[in-house]
Length: 293
Image 1 (tube, rainbow, N blue to C red):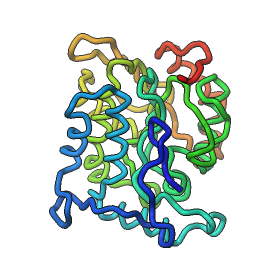
Image 2 (tube, rainbow, N blue to C red; image 1 turned 180 degrees about the vertical axis):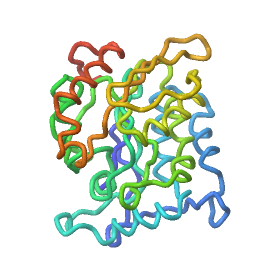
Image 3 (spheres, rainbow, N blue to C red; image 1 turned 180 degrees about the horizontal axis):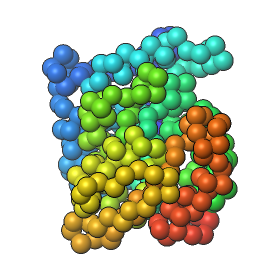
């Protein structure tokens, strides 16, 4: 199944027989036809100065073409070929998963990485797995999503004033990207944040990994991050000053919506809804929103 970009248009087709992708993009080590680094590709996505919506569409497409991390490429494509028995009739996405949500969002949610049989299968962040079930139920409950469930990229789900992304765009083995993979993927997040600066007012980070990855990206994107860097905690709140004197950004910490946290009660639905409401208030989304026409 094709992934859907910011505008709702599907991305490039995949090969249906193997779960792989028709992709001539090579790793930045010069092993193929495309030798730009991730940083260069991320910068090029917005180099011509288009509006935020067009810029994010270009960025999202560039993300889906990335093959910079050999371990992640091998894993995501192996999972797409072998599949889980319950999804044997699916054509897995098997590529990097871009962000999801409107280009003029004032609230961003940052996760960890796509799940092997969730977003790596469906092509949309937090879609098709238990973590997404928890997240979208909470988003819907506080008026930030059109539906409490997310099952596939073409299910019509809309986010209201919210964009969801992650610091690592490929599904990692055991849900654990390496520090090197995190750092290699960071320019994509930096560019996404920089592109959304005119409207972004609040950010919710799910988990310590995302927190550690996002703070440096925020600094690179134009916000002043305190030294020493604030520690992650559920309910943490940090207000970052824009280096150019623009509006501040409120950053909230929240336990990740993983099964480990939700099944054990470390993160409960009321706890999650509380953080989402705090983030929505900081972003000016106090009232239920309506999708753009």
